[in-house]
Length: 369
Image (cartoon, helix red, strand yellow):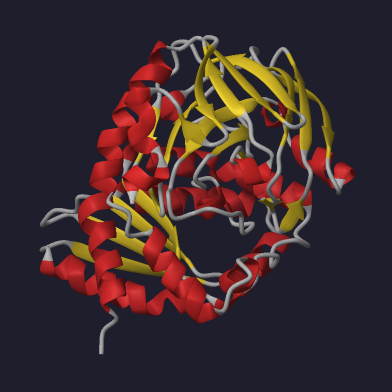
């Protein structure tokens, strides 16, 4: 018997996220563990009159390839991948990994080489194709969330079932306010940071590119960031998880970075020049995601959170920063996490994780559930 929750999720991905139409070509990429969803996506795509194509992902194969990457090999892959994405209209990526640390022993120079070589491909489909990314429930992901697999599966389907149309409507007010704002100030324990977002578009996200979703993002003017920010959630990257990350900025550049693995943190931030500048600032608001689990697709949407991102900027909200990394780091400002405030041009807009301006109160959790 079919799981109705999988059917509903597939419907959300195809009809809300991608707005897939008859005659369009959709690439469905996913790990073997996501097979129930992949099969449902194929069936529903056919029912819509679309043409599904499938690519199965495998962590072991990806790791083994990564250990020996060369520029010549990757150039051929770039050519193949670019042609593939040119030939499709939309893509769904269903992540269902067995081991989040599988790539942790791949040398940094191999990560950097792949990132640099494959960037034109990712830039092309991110900016020119409709796409959506999600995590499918697995025992490994449940373990990260410190839940049983059954409980985590229930949780995932719940956080993916937000009324995204309602969320999108509520986000319009925050988008408008951000696009009128020059100076932003973030305050909280270990955090006093200022920067400008003047002239950078604000992009509301309500289930179009990520599921689960719930954020509005922009980017700081590249050289405007000054002060310190200290993150109170785990910061996973390249198979490592960093705790107590604190960054000090001067004229946009990270001049000091500390964590429980300070040396490794700085190795990543030294990947290229853009890795020490910020490519994204976002405010999270998914009412069903309350606590971090060390997986950024969930953590960056936490109710009452924000994230600040060393590395590549998105073309939709472009401050000109370029890098082979894009590392979302999350700060929760609800009282149980130490509290904090966000100010726009000196006006308090969110305190201890709750929006305080009347026009933004629709984004508080009780109004989004």
